[in-house]
Length: 559
Image: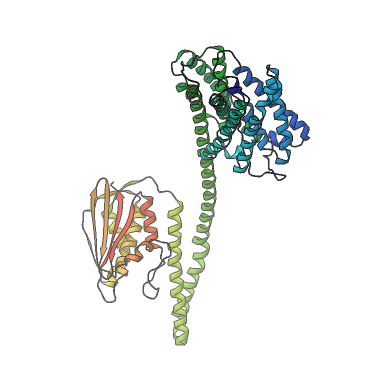
């Protein structure tokens, strides 16, 4: 956006990591279709596209008394070039050079003037394409903020610095203008043109045509296009700070549509700004120096770039959401397999275990006196191991069922009833060890599932009775407190205690802290308790001192 010099200089495009013959193109994209055509036809197409955009940019910039315009051609050329193997670049760049010179000559420049524009434009296009190819910038990578920012930096900012510097030096040596004025004019219009065109050009060329067609067929695109252009014209003609409002419709589009739709609207809005400047519909504020025109370009870029970044961020979120849904589906299938295992385990495995235990008992009961002592001992071991295996199977089934099933709707559960039911199930064990269990009644009510909470209390109380030094009488206490909508249920004992280093391992499935010869169990009881506590939205923690007992804290919502 500036004077006639402004017209020449804006690259941009999209990148590619692969370079030469192995260049990979997206199936179904226009770029992939173009490789089937001979190089001369591709070069001719590139020349025509470049000439059309260059003519549009020159037409908008060469209006008497107008300051600003946007150079679109280099960004489109860069996008075309970056998708080609580098062996084709010389011919394609030659086409760009001819198109550039012909367009400038057609507007009345002499051949010397027309050719003076060529080196800087070629430098921008080639440098931008090389940087983007090396960075691997492709349409598929633009659905995230970081790759999009990297592409704009490498394709719409750094090459323009080089192109503007070369143009300023060349025109200064030819005596065609001051270096600073030329540099600013070239750089500003080139950057804004690239910011407006680069993303759109790469998406149109590199993403599958079916995806592009889907976007173009969306009626919301045309609705927001009309609203965006109308808002742009209204802001430019009636509002004192129009660029503040130009991006609002684009931001709204980013929330509803994809990046291609936003890029297309951004390009059309930039064209609307240029036309408004040329026609006099928008009169920029007065300036006292040429460099102050940079404010206009900066404001225009600030209106065009953030919506594209927002669209990329939302696209990344959508991709993440899609991956999460896919992962959820995979987990659901895995859970279905687990449910099938649970069904098999609960029927097919339990039945032979019961048979082993029952027939072993029958042999010992009916023929034990006739068997040698060693045979009796071996059969007794078989029976004990079958009982242990059944207990382990029960624990595994309980653990799997709790993990795979959601809790029923929470209800108010009286902890007094839960504790008493758990003690009834443990009555034989309490009597066998002469244990003493004190319950500080009344206990508060909690929100949850009564059967699962009974299972938790049964495990906690059972462990308190079991993990005792030899010959010591277990003393267990159950109490509770209420604070800030939560109940803290404490189960304390005088047992062997737990070392601090082992506390983190205590709730891991199948992790045992003692040998089976010392204390029986599957290693699943506390893991199951913690799983149930977390399913209720609460927690299970432990504080313990070796040799002085343990104190388990079950935190549950108040009922």
